[in-house]
Image (cartoon, rainbow, N blue to C red; front, top):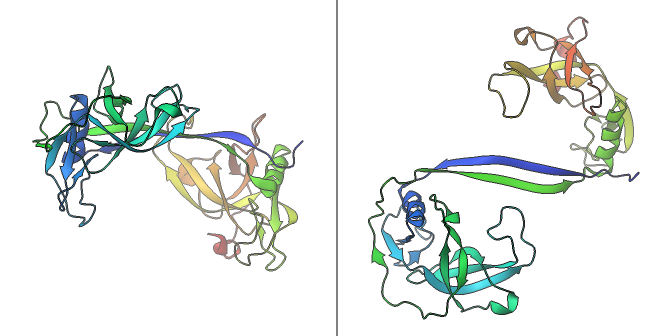
Length: 315
């Protein structure tokens, strides 16, 4: 068995935001196959449009329509597209200065290979078959043999029927997490229903979970110390909003628990007692479920409450 543990980890959540008048007009315009920019204080046309001037930081609202063709200003080849990227086949990430714009827009270019991409090449927007008012309404860019369009960008009111006023963007990060040697020892001990911390050789404080170094003294903490399993509730909060995909009925209590022998409180859920009877100083012990590495929750031990003086420094 490898000394250091590793595990795949996914962090995922929907990011929801409302749109101001500039971003609303830009995204609604994409739905209508129209690309809008905004005129900055120095006369430059900024695409995608910014809500505040990049030089003066003043609010800007002067919308203009630019072309759907443009010129590649720089690029990078992506040989292995990842989940959720614009194309499933190899493509180029490109910065494209659309006709009439003075700044570049980042998007994907559908090209047969890196030899087909170059700075200065002409490209055009390939619109998505179904458009909803999002940057993905531009499916990608594609090579264009046409010449650059002349003329100035045209003023635009930014008004569209059924304007997009908010967006929800799924955010996801897939990666492999390695907790390091110290945390790996801690996790392996939990498998045996033991809780292990590490003691600082200088200040002699015991940290759980162990960190590998003392945050106070800055020296390595390599002496393992078994703590708990019982502990004391130092402070707590009552959770009244049910989390998505979490099979726990509200209200419930989440608490900081100072395990016996530890000098740092860890947090865990309190069970086996009505939420309104949880209190500072309550003595608790861990409850493991079958096959679980971490305690499912902590429950009261039935002991008298701890004296405040014994845990006040761990709140």
